[in-house]
Picture (spheres, one colour):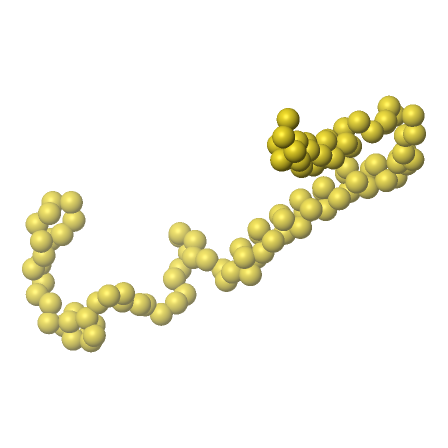
Length: 110
Protein backbone atom coordinates (compact mmCIF):
# COMPACT_ATOMS: atom_id res chain seq x y z
CA UNK A 1 0.00 0.00 0.00
CA UNK A 2 1.50 3.38 -0.94
CA UNK A 3 2.42 5.79 1.82
CA UNK A 4 -0.08 8.40 0.72
CA UNK A 5 -3.00 5.98 0.86
CA UNK A 6 -1.88 4.70 4.25
CA UNK A 7 -1.64 8.28 5.59
CA UNK A 8 -5.08 9.13 4.20
CA UNK A 9 -6.70 6.08 5.75
CA UNK A 10 -4.96 6.71 9.05
CA UNK A 11 -6.06 10.37 8.95
CA UNK A 12 -9.68 9.30 8.45
CA UNK A 13 -9.68 6.34 10.80
CA UNK A 14 -8.13 8.01 13.86
CA UNK A 15 -10.84 10.70 14.25
CA UNK A 16 -13.57 8.08 13.81
CA UNK A 17 -12.05 5.88 16.51
CA UNK A 18 -11.54 8.88 18.77
CA UNK A 19 -15.19 9.88 18.34
CA UNK A 20 -16.33 6.40 19.34
CA UNK A 21 -14.01 6.09 22.34
CA UNK A 22 -16.65 7.10 24.95
CA UNK A 23 -18.70 4.09 23.87
CA UNK A 24 -15.94 1.82 25.16
CA UNK A 25 -15.82 3.42 28.62
CA UNK A 26 -16.51 1.04 31.50
CA UNK A 27 -19.67 2.05 33.29
CA UNK A 28 -21.73 -0.83 34.49
CA UNK A 29 -23.63 1.05 37.20
CA UNK A 30 -21.26 0.19 40.04
CA UNK A 31 -21.14 3.78 41.25
CA UNK A 32 -24.71 5.08 41.31
CA UNK A 33 -25.20 8.73 42.13
CA UNK A 34 -26.64 10.11 45.35
CA UNK A 35 -30.38 9.52 45.46
CA UNK A 36 -32.88 12.35 45.74
CA UNK A 37 -34.82 12.77 48.94
CA UNK A 38 -38.61 12.71 49.09
CA UNK A 39 -38.78 16.48 49.43
CA UNK A 40 -36.75 17.09 46.29
CA UNK A 41 -38.78 14.55 44.33
CA UNK A 42 -42.00 16.31 45.34
CA UNK A 43 -40.45 19.70 44.55
CA UNK A 44 -39.18 18.65 41.12
CA UNK A 45 -42.15 16.59 39.96
CA UNK A 46 -45.13 18.27 41.70
CA UNK A 47 -44.46 21.79 42.96
CA UNK A 48 -42.50 23.14 39.97
CA UNK A 49 -44.91 21.80 37.26
CA UNK A 50 -47.96 23.03 39.20
CA UNK A 51 -46.27 26.42 39.65
CA UNK A 52 -45.52 26.66 35.92
CA UNK A 53 -49.12 25.72 35.15
CA UNK A 54 -50.45 28.41 37.51
CA UNK A 55 -48.20 31.09 36.01
CA UNK A 56 -49.36 30.21 32.48
CA UNK A 57 -53.01 30.16 33.62
CA UNK A 58 -52.59 33.57 35.30
CA UNK A 59 -51.05 35.17 32.23
CA UNK A 60 -53.70 33.67 29.94
CA UNK A 61 -56.57 35.10 32.04
CA UNK A 62 -54.90 38.45 32.74
CA UNK A 63 -56.21 40.24 29.61
CA UNK A 64 -59.82 39.37 30.44
CA UNK A 65 -59.34 40.55 34.04
CA UNK A 66 -58.03 43.92 32.84
CA UNK A 67 -60.82 44.47 30.32
CA UNK A 68 -63.70 46.86 31.01
CA UNK A 69 -67.19 45.50 31.71
CA UNK A 70 -68.95 44.27 28.60
CA UNK A 71 -72.49 44.86 27.43
CA UNK A 72 -74.81 42.00 28.30
CA UNK A 73 -78.07 41.47 26.40
CA UNK A 74 -81.12 42.62 28.31
CA UNK A 75 -79.30 45.36 30.18
CA UNK A 76 -79.69 49.02 29.22
CA UNK A 77 -77.08 50.58 26.92
CA UNK A 78 -75.03 53.09 28.92
CA UNK A 79 -72.83 54.57 26.18
CA UNK A 80 -73.15 57.31 23.56
CA UNK A 81 -74.41 56.08 20.20
CA UNK A 82 -71.82 55.65 17.44
CA UNK A 83 -72.35 55.52 13.71
CA UNK A 84 -69.66 53.43 12.02
CA UNK A 85 -68.85 54.13 8.38
CA UNK A 86 -71.86 56.41 8.00
CA UNK A 87 -72.19 59.90 6.53
CA UNK A 88 -70.16 62.79 7.92
CA UNK A 89 -73.28 64.55 9.26
CA UNK A 90 -75.66 61.81 10.48
CA UNK A 91 -78.36 64.21 11.72
CA UNK A 92 -78.74 65.79 8.27
CA UNK A 93 -78.70 62.35 6.61
CA UNK A 94 -81.48 61.09 8.87
CA UNK A 95 -83.57 64.25 8.30
CA UNK A 96 -83.15 63.99 4.51
CA UNK A 97 -84.09 60.31 4.39
CA UNK A 98 -87.46 59.46 2.89
CA UNK A 99 -89.81 57.39 4.99
CA UNK A 100 -90.30 53.91 3.57
CA UNK A 101 -87.70 54.43 0.85
CA UNK A 102 -86.07 51.11 1.57
CA UNK A 103 -87.50 47.99 3.07
CA UNK A 104 -84.26 46.05 3.49
CA UNK A 105 -84.17 42.82 5.38
CA UNK A 106 -84.30 39.32 3.94
CA UNK A 107 -86.72 40.30 1.17
CA UNK A 108 -83.84 42.04 -0.65
CA UNK A 109 -86.10 44.97 -1.59
CA UNK A 110 -83.80 47.86 -1.05
